[in-house]
Image (cartoon, rainbow, N blue to C red; front, side, top):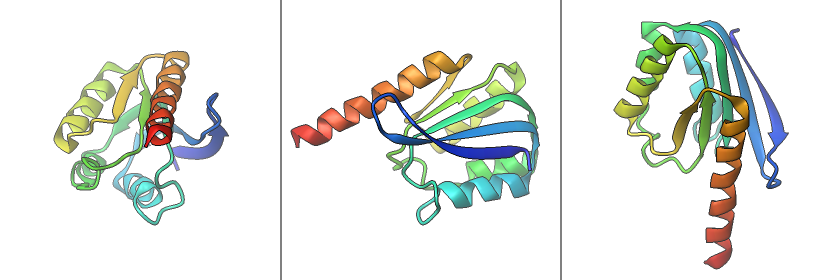
Length: 131
């Protein structure tokens, strides 16, 4: 399986998931990821740091799995994706545009991705505390 997930704690104290991806992401892999993050999945509603620096390609079937998701637009989860492969970056931007994802951002390095993710969660916590 070209992805592995672990839980970790952001500097603000919130629990998050770290997903390391490698090699080629297949349709089966994409379906497994979606099952884990969608409502009822073990990773639902957790902020995510996706490390895709070792990802070499995303199959067309996997792209289809991700673009057919209709729950992304209203999702409240923040996601930071670290990748430096320009072709994978173009693919990720395309998928994000199709999904109209507003809470996902691409980064070239882990430190800035973690800083952004932590900042988004801190902002959400302040907003919830003000309500």
